[in-house]
Image (tube, rainbow, N blue to C red):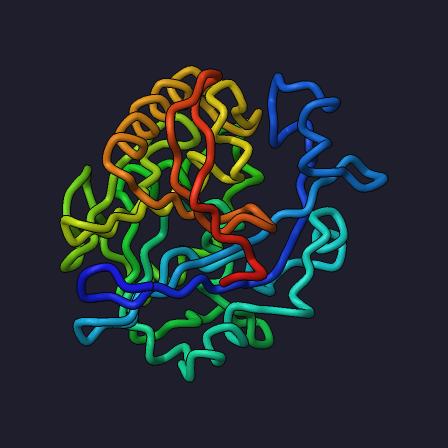
Length: 283
């Protein structure tokens, strides 16, 4: 796919699993399990899908997946599986080495979005992309440094502190263009200052939804994660975003859906519905 100056490529970094009830909040299991059947521990399969943009002399990566720094206990809890795909192996399919990445855009710093940015070598944690500028909203970085008891487990300091120490972090503040042809839209329902990259050339447009709409099923307005800090804010942010996406024909990119990579939406009798769906077997 091309949008403006960029080629866009989904990058599979592996799968993991989270509690289905937490992923769908107040929605009854009898509804969500039809699309996302849980395992014996009530966990549903999740993708950790990044997006690679190549063009204009840049190789830009949006989010980095879980990474490989987890203990065996945590790997079991989150059922992390990088056997069939990992961030580095998926980049290699595009003849890219980590040191060739010029820019990394973090939507936010939760471990399943930023974990792949660093790697443990012996007792040392090192950047995976040593030549890249790493962009994150300043307010999100501050939230990651001082999390509440409710979201403390979502942030792993080893994912981002070394980047700051190495001078690789660049702070964004609010909405606007951060790289040529790449804007960010900022949302506060899931976590403080989540930035969703928006790539457009005036004709075609794509929004990297991150955890505003993590799975295609979350296009339904009331389907909101229990992980969200401010669920009613999420509700209104989704409503405004989906209105614009339906009106202007944006392509929505789903980071966590194991089957649906992207889709457009239209307004239907019961809310928003998917159309022009791209599935993993087609990408």
